[in-house]
Length: 318
Ligand code: GDP
Ligand code: CA
Image (tube, rainbow, N blue to C red):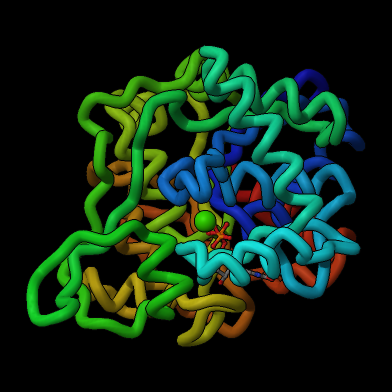
């Protein structure tokens, strides 16, 4: 469909890989892509604003990501981290590479000068030319925290501390999107969703990548009330996430780690949920989500061609 407008709601690594396929699909048919990216993982480290999901998407689409590690820059070096460790500077658990740090320095300088995150993101993207429009879900502070039992008491800790430092292995009660009630969609986000011909939910973590985007007041309504069909792609194949620890996040919500579990969490649009279509892996072909069209296809994003084929299958569910 020439001139088709596609919006993708996305987290970091899984979403970034998926976007490689969406971009290839879009280039072939002359479609426009807007990625609405989770900011719930963002944090300040050593005085610098770090946006892990925006950077994963920007580096991956810009050809600058480390394909092995999955996050951060290719050909990275770690001199600054070693020097920080020599000072005993905390936190030491977050990996900040030297090349990556340049991004955070440029971003922080501009944020400090008063530019909103969406403008700073666009400025950073002029270097990387990601080929899709990158928009943070919000310019405002919205941080995912985990409410946990730690040191004998209940506390809320930043998602990154929960995920990286504690490996999601401590007793966890729930997640909170701090600041969400007062957050506004970044300029362009609501318009992009409203004017879209198709909204895709990337195979990102439903609990801590997609949910914080939809927690920005107005965004969930824009998706559910929009004219565009909404098609989700399962991040779970069989009973496990393809990579990472999404199962631990689903556990906290008491949701089964399966394509059916995540499909049920999103729910069908006809019953107040999000989905018109749900793309699952071939091994999950028997998945049923009430009032949702379910289709099975190979869902392993092994290379761009495989991922583009996945996107074709998702578009087929429109
Ligand atoms: P994060 O923000 O960096 O954690 O990345 P996302 O939330 O965007 O994506 C994480 C999810 O991507 C995980 O739950 C994985 O299961 C999923 N994922 C990673 N690789 C693949 C793949 O090849 N196929 C599918 N279907 N899902 C994948
Ligand atoms: Ca993330």
